[in-house]
Image 1 (cartoon, rainbow, N blue to C red):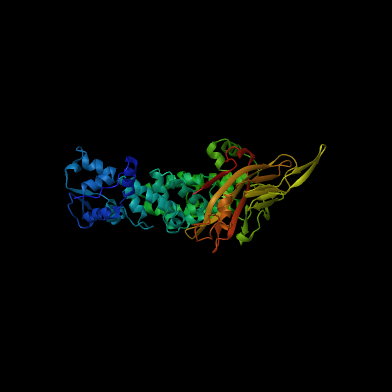
Image 2: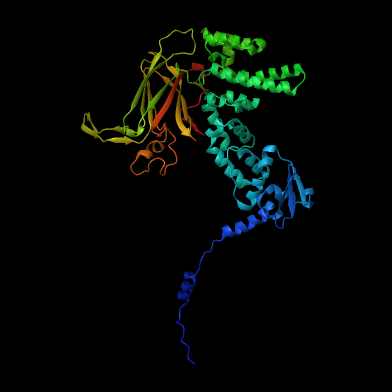
Length: 511
């Protein structure tokens, strides 16, 4: 019998044929489904977790693989739980409510996160050291900070992440609170501020608020709620009073009374808390009154020479009309390239009311779509030199002091508040602030790269898709069509003694 012989292959050809038949099979979904079935059907469980009286059958292998805490608890013989088949876990009601979903994540890698459940999930992930779930929670929270503020959670998020040093999220929450302080202060969550956390926040000079008087009102609101809580916690009225005085010293001491005008200082006497704790408030009000009288008394000089005392005379980013003005560009997409928008405004030359001087006039030019310096010719002694055209892809803000002092300089703090929409909430998304001295020889101050040129303008390039068709957000634009640019410019005078404690130019932060 004859057989057809197989064709012969060289070693290389044989290897190629073998490789051409290799197939990578991915059946991971089915494998995960089988593992999930162990949890859903309660099959072959070898341990039972008890939370709030409810039993959850589980598997040591899955728990130890997913959580380093469970791994130590169940595998280390020094822990009594390692010998137990039934373990009772103590969880807060918030965590107990979400525990079955948390445990299910170990088996499926899936979990539904929302504003109402995120804190419970994150607390469980942190407690049991489930690093991948913690990262997912932090990422979700980072992109929902504005929404959390509207839903009375931003202060809770901030304080929790601050306590556990979640370094990405904590500064983002802090910046949102600082730059949208009034939005946060009107929420119920504002009164959940711990005294030490609120005290540190009130020490910040880039806090955006309408006025120092408005800030005082919000702190009084917070103080009232703390007093109610103390009255519930202590039956002894003397102990309540001691606690209130301690809160005044810790928190209210950070209010900058000299930054209130004399009328506002007088109105403080209408507050029952001020009248009740006169010993605390009168001295601070007196410093404020002396400041506005225009003379540096011994006490004011002493405060100016101390680190903490300087803050009393340092203005924040006040948005009252006398200190701020807005540039709003509607139909931003139709604004021609290189075209500026100009704003003319005025501001008082000093914070002291007794100093009667003419308001300073400012010319503010915003170049949101770059600058173009056209070709020109320069005539020099050698002949004519051609200066080529120069295009700068930058967002520039130019501030001109129209009538700078003939001698000396005019020291001001400049803040630019950039509005945006996050999770359908309009808020301040970025702040740039700096200090500059204007003089007769230096009366123009330019800030280049105020915003990211590409983030602001690439949406309108022909090569980019339309908003909603590939670009997830327009971070610096507001309005229904995301086609309005809004900047609020704060220009506020500084005492010359304070120039060393302010942040340098380009102090820009984002959340």
